[in-house]
Length: 379
Image (cartoon, rainbow, N blue to C red):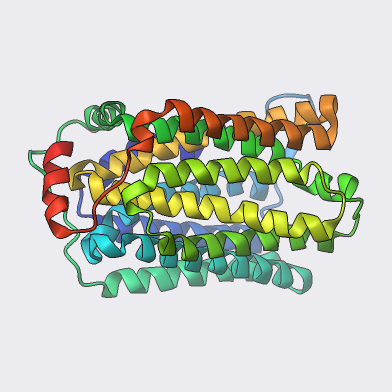
């Protein structure tokens, strides 16, 4: 919920302020928030506080304090992402955007996976407060890198800033005018909903459909998907997708639907793992194509708002999809959920291939002369 609420304004903020300064400030706030979390779980205030709802229901004070501090961490991450993504095209040539985004997000995926494993190991043998040292160190390293960064990331605006709400609304209006980007956002909204429907029950899928009760196998599925995502980030640049970005996105969505369908048809983990790997590649590839295309075709002063509007669309139906996944599992069973979600994504991919004409034409040139022409058209 904090992510969704903040995403409405995160892009407008990124398009108003020097992005380097903004990233330093929000990352510092995240660093402080993690430090406060560590203090909370170290001292563990023992007071119990009554909460609304069933009479006699209490929560420890230290648990209640976790919520606002964790919300602060998620809000800073939401503010950070548009500022970061809009900075990449200021540092690399447009011909290298696909490779740069792929490397950045592959490294992020692997670091996230390694951090998650490390936290699990620490929690097994040491107190919770020591596990929080891992995100603290990562945020601290990021802060050092941001302070040492020497680059001009000031926003290139054609006019003075206006009211924050007005600029946020202007970003959504811009997205509506750029039909291809709007079609991607609508597609992402539906796909994230359907993916959440299936993947919220992934642990149950492993335990009941694959009949593997050991937690190791669930970890293996998650790890395989993560590695697949990293490979997707790294490999998509080799496709030379720039001139046909929209058609590549549609193809990847079709493969994503087929992968979920296949998971609902196989009963062996040795078949499921390679399918999960392929499925994990698709979001990484789609994300890289989308980021690079927006960075190459959207004016600098509007780019943060386009990224934030896409994030709103991406997150808006995920909680609804997760709840729907639980209900559908009760009605259809685990296999039925995967077949329904995968089949629906496949149908969506076909509809996009047939009916989303603007998206089929979406692409960009990698030569420098095209950059000024596209920026003029976008403004």
